[in-house]
Length: 142
Image 1 (cartoon, one colour):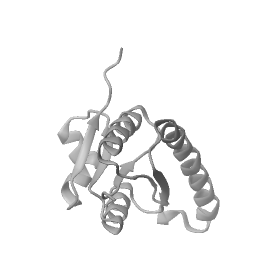
Image 2 (cartoon, rainbow, N blue to C red):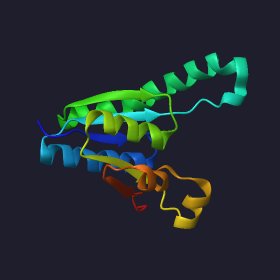
Image 3 (tube, one colour):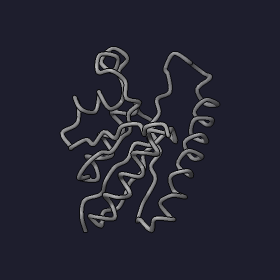
């Protein structure tokens, strides 16, 4: 079986565009699609992190459900992973562990300098991943 494709997904418009591209690639290659929702819990929150973790995990599950509906319709083999790490690092760790052929993410079309300053996930991935990264642009408004 071909190596899986890892998709970073947060249910935003740009993530949905990345999902569509990842579905197209998975169908073409016969690869399984691994949908990853990665999140970081700020350590400065002290004892309050338990409730926050549960809320973020629930959000991740709801977010992943958006993707799985589309994947079921497309007939693509998939799995979902909720990863309690910073998004870029979490995506790379999952991709490395699974021997993925690529990581697919969407972008808001921000200027590269803004990504460098603000630390966008696609920008970070391009610098830390040894696995190919496909960055799908946000769709043009109709």
